[in-house]
Image: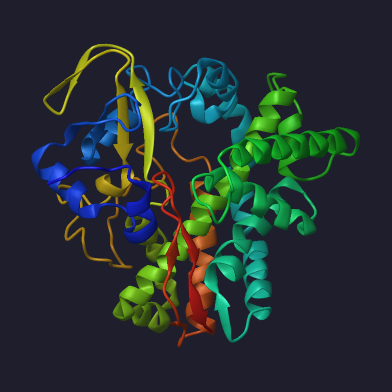
Length: 396
């Protein structure tokens, strides 16, 4: 079988290469994959247990040496990127995360439930007839929530939407004319965050920005660059993942009408459906790590500084962990998916928030639109990083 797990055109037309990933899990779970366009070869890791092992051992698999993103970049660019939590290892990452955690406690998130329900109702009240599920429902929901978290004006959500599209869709001609636009969008988010922080220093409010720029009980605080980069991460991670889980989840329910009927008959299944949607869609397809020492993994000898890439789309369909992994089952329990990461330092900070948004959205959809139907083909994002859907026409 020809193996190419990073062909962007495959993701744009068919989504993740599940057939190749299944073959690798069975025959070569740690696979020496050829690099593309002069980039180095890398180890493709496809089994659940190996992805979890890598995720939980930052001391052996670094997010900082060559960053967590798949693409190569020059060292001067990496220097700047290392200021972001995503591209840090403990202990630096631990310090930063403990400061940011203050805004994401279960109490803070659960307090948002009624507000998210109101946002969903408002969104659906403003939709009728045939709409694009992505731009009218899936994308605005997390954008409204992010604006709420940041205490940013709701009218700014369109700007946030555009910036996020340009950063994530740099390889997709619908979103960016050239990859440089992603960098320009990031700079705009950075400036926007700076402005927000300045406003809150002058006039603190009861929102996450005010919390994060105040010193913690030890007197520590995020400096200006750390805060700006956190907002940048929130705009991408807090928006893209929920948006694409929602869109991919709706598509999965259209592809499995018997599951949609179960949800309509019992909307309380939205609780387990949220996790099954994240497992099935795996909105983040891959992350990169760099080996910090010579070691063995899956029977392969990995050398220090080798590029190691974990594939969540594959781990989440590993038959050693999931009964009937190719079955989409909204009542699946237990469901030890790793759609929010495999644990360890980089486990998704906003996982409770994402699941809350998905649960409420699908509960409301099932109650309000039991005859919801798909009216046209879904169009996918050209990206091997985010399993994204750009367009999904539906009739409410």
